[in-house]
Amino acid sequence: MSEASTVGDAARERGVRLVSGLGLATLILVAGVAIAFSVGRFPVTLGDLGVALWSLISGQPSGLAPATEAVIFNIRGPRVVAAILCGAALAVAGAAFQGLFRNPLVSPDILGASSGAALGAVIGIYFSLGIFGIQALAFAGGLLAVALVYLIGSAIRGGDTVLVLVLTGVVIGALLGAGVGLMKYLADPYNQLPAMTFWLLGSLAGTDKSDLLPLFGPVLAGTLVLFALRWRMNVMSLPEEEARALGLATGPIRIAIVAAATLVTAASVAAAGVIGWVGLIVPHLARFIVGPEFGRLIPTAALMGGGYLLIIDTLARSSAQIEIPLGILTAVIGTPFFIWLLVNARKSWS
Amino acid sequence: MTLAADTLSFGYPGRTIGRDVSLAVKPGEALARLGPNGGGKTTRLKTMLGLIAPHGGSVTIDGRRLSGISIAERARLIGYVPQAHAGAFAFSVRDVVLMGRTAHQGVFAKPSKSDRAIADARLTELGIAHLAGKPYTMISGGERQLVLIARALAQEPRYVVLDEPTASLDFGNQGKVMRQITTLKARGLGVCFTTHDPNQALRHADSVALLRDGTLVSQGAPHDVLSRVKVEALYGTKVEMILGQTSFAFVPG
Image (cartoon, rainbow over all chains, first blue to last red):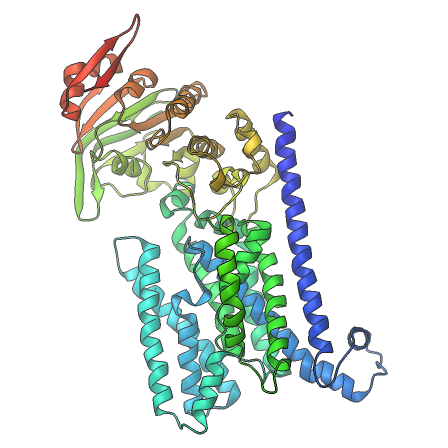
């Protein structure tokens, strides 16, 4: 075999991997949507969904029962869209942070985004601010926490920049966790405390149409920035000095990646509460299928994360008499899955 | 046309390791920096690359101070071959070499057709095109070192700096990698490599600098500088000199 055709084969193999990865991810997502709409006290078939969506595009009346339309557009639809957006956001942010910190065991809350958002939310609940105030405080809390970690981390000179950032994130995260504990201690135990606990475990139960825009905007913006920086992110996952020797100004690129990944994480946490595991596991699964190159990894992780959280959320609202918090389900499913990954899929991250 | 250090002092923040080192390498020539481990070879090399700021003196490239050249332009002038490491993620060999094109691309760019053609050409030249689709984490240490040389060449630099290119390689792979030094010179590149093996300097370098405790002990043509007495003094151990018909080699102990 000639050298040139070997190189061509490699390019073809890459293409096949990408198509099969994106195909599988899309399949999971479509299956998730079909299941999500058909499961529940008022089942909606894929046909009904198609008719309703067509009427939305064409402006013609759908001819569906008003109750069916209400379920699609006001109840189940917003929740499905929110689950997809949150899952995609967490998976993309997880992939970005794992690359940036050159460590496959990192999750999106490594720099304190979740702890900051959690503190913002419990403060909002403590002062009975209402849902919009709580979400705004959570969003701001996530961004502020990461900005604080970044400022402190960059002010500490000498040593490994990345290690200093991670350690600062751990320390500030612990402090914010103490703040959350304090608010829970001070809260009214019959009214506020259950609300805080429920929010901290993650849920999409209260999602309605008005929640979608504040979620969609930041998630789209952050994901687009990360996708645009995909080749710089590949280089950022090399040791710092190598990346700089290749001509990359690592400082500004790192700030851009952290800002974009934090934006999507904070938006997701503000909408759905703290949902662990998605941002840790989905990037692994995606990397296992399409490899670590970010141009392929980001879209695959986004689709898979969306489908994954949608299926989890469908389980959360349908598998028991009461809503099961998402954070609990993702942990119950995530733990054995992650152990399986450790045993069988080492090559995806070693 | 030279990559030169002029009365350079270097080290990490708060700790100067070496002082008063002046060296130069010209296109088509190889300079070996020889010395025992801990002699400041790697630190000085990072200073030459502009990764660490000098504590005194200066590094110049074709007469321009390195500190006045942007990070991207620096990468288009000097290619860096670090010691081979496993890496955190299983990028394909082709993607690793493509990363050498970073300094030729815009911030939001993905590799162009010509970037890919250059990367593939470098893989073919180094005889590792058959590895293109393999994960970088799954190939041998010797193959990794060749991939990193291909990546440095994809930068299309005028100088290449290699940090202990044969550290932790077996005997055969040491030969494969060191032969590339000769190829790099033949391409008209100025080559600068660190080593702790005086025989590599003898065989592949046009000039050699002996560094001990951060200071330049001696420099010049390999056959002038590398005498048994000097090598013994450099490493602090007894050395035997084996004479061949046209060349010689050192054996420690």
